[in-house]
Length: 308
Image 1: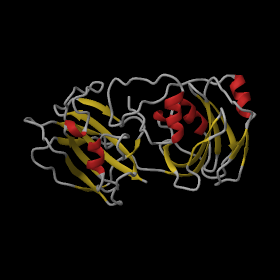
Image 2: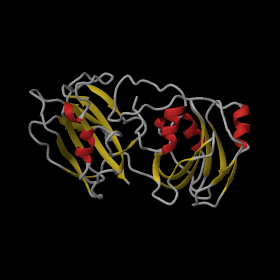
Image 3: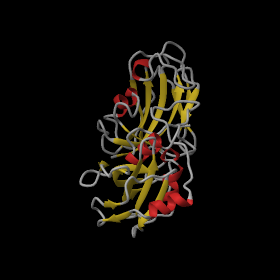
Image 4: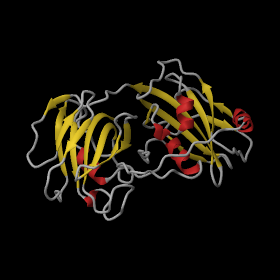
């Protein structure tokens, strides 16, 4: 099971941080923050959220009016304004604005209104059950209010879906000749990779070898990328893959993703497929991570599908 990127969306952070205990993964992905456990809102929670008044026009930061302190026992959501744009589809990258306040005293917790939107992958299991259920069947332009209970307070957040972009499932571009001494990659009909490892000592420096050269813009430091990927140990043991599930979205920032991904993907072009061989000091070092032993060299094949 993959882990949620720490900077995907502020609501996802609230779900992960406030909704109870997080789930431990059997195997580790390049990310470092666990996804949230599911919960079910009671009729009382739904009624409480319905009492919150939300004012403001589309595209502008909303204003919440509610009785303080505001509390819920489980995560709840409410559609404030239905969207009039295209219907959302699983796998799309949504451009979202958000605004959050503390239910105890109404203080601001963060906003993206007036700044750049944040990306969210429609239907990604890392979003949490409540987020995906609230987004299902909605259209671009929808405004949705969430209440998220935590250990110290309940938090209120509105998200507005500004846009939606469909991304391909696989890398598309010009094939690059294999490089001697590196693991060999074979692609199935759907584009999913398998790896044939090589014998010998693993490289001690990062390898970032394009296998397919895409024609899109170069990825820059700090961007959020959407990818399909598979990860193996140096000996060819597979430990993680997004293929057959949801595409993976993460910011290329320290703390959100391992350093080997940041150093290896920055400068590559959208549409490319990249073979990454990541030494331990740019991965998990001397720390065991799920099924990944300590001091492991990791091998990834990453299809860069979008960057924003």
